[in-house]
Image (cartoon, rainbow, N blue to C red; front, side, top):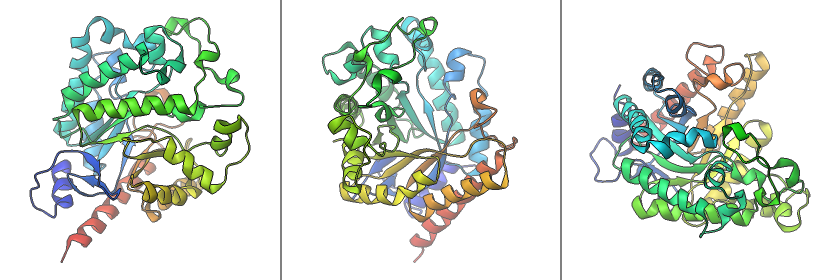
Amino acid sequence: MLLLLTLFLTASGGRAADVSPGLSAGDDGTLRLVGKPYRGIGVNYYDTFVRTLAEPSRTNYEAGFRVLAGLGIPFARFSAGGYWPAEWGLYQTNRAEHFARLDAVVKSAERNQVGLIPSLFWLLSTVPDLVGEPCNQWGNPKSRTQAFMRDYVREVVTRYRASPAIWAWEFGNEYNLVADLPNAADHRPSVVPSLGTPAARSARDELTHEQIRAAFTAFSMEVHRYDPHRLIITGNAFPRVSAWHQRAEKSWAKDTPEQFAQMLAGDNPGSVNSLSVRAYDTSDADRLGAAMGVAAQVHKPLFVGEFGVPGNPTPESRKRFAEILRRLESEQVPLAALWVFDFDGQADDWSVTATNARAYQLEAVAEANRRLRRAASSRLTP
């Protein structure tokens, strides 16, 4: 199935267009694919690279991409590096082999014409642990942490920027949720020395909003050095309902709508040309309209990087899933991704495949994409 070609022709009205590949943000904040307005719903394929990074024989992502292409599901968000520091061992000792395995994932997506959103630094503590610094060094432009980030960005972006499979670049996963916590000492990163973490944590492993924003800004500037076109994503969740008060006074007081808007925009700063949130329950879905309002104000498209419902299907869980998907469509969210496709690590509760009990979610996403494509085609019809 020529999925990416179909999307290209749909976006360009059936005509070839001299534009860069992947997603971008228009000057008015419209999400664009190959230069034309776009809406789509993909999946998180979290370990498509992590699995083969751990075991080179695990190349069954090829079959997964074929499933996604067959369903017309246009893209997959995935972790483009290890989760724990120990999972970066191959990169540190045999960089050529590390990238050979990542090359194979990208080539597989190209063959199956599925877009990719690589998330480069999934776990916030991993890079600082690798270079022997506390986590707050994400906020220091002269740190070894930021130097490692810049090196990996350069290697990854320059290696894959010509690939039509790459749709966007993402920094990491939900760093904003730990920023300025009033009880931050209780939520420091995990200590698992056997997986490469230090033996202890300190207050220097607690992050502030200023520090994560500095990291996001440095990342976006480094990506744009090599790829000025594609969408850049922080990977954030919705701001906590008390995020403004946490930053201002380390309290759990509830933010006003204006404070929410300030935090959502501020946590996706500067040349980060998108807004990133999650939608796991009705309270998240209820905030989508406000988030779309902020997106319009700051001229950045909204990405719901994760949404879904866990567990074996029941009438209630099916209803909740259908409602979240309905709200994504009715609020005209331009981009969203189901959590999570074909992930053995969450096989009992979250993993969705074409054959397991949660297959209905994949089918519903496929049908939603068909509706979005029909709507796009009707707008292009004279």
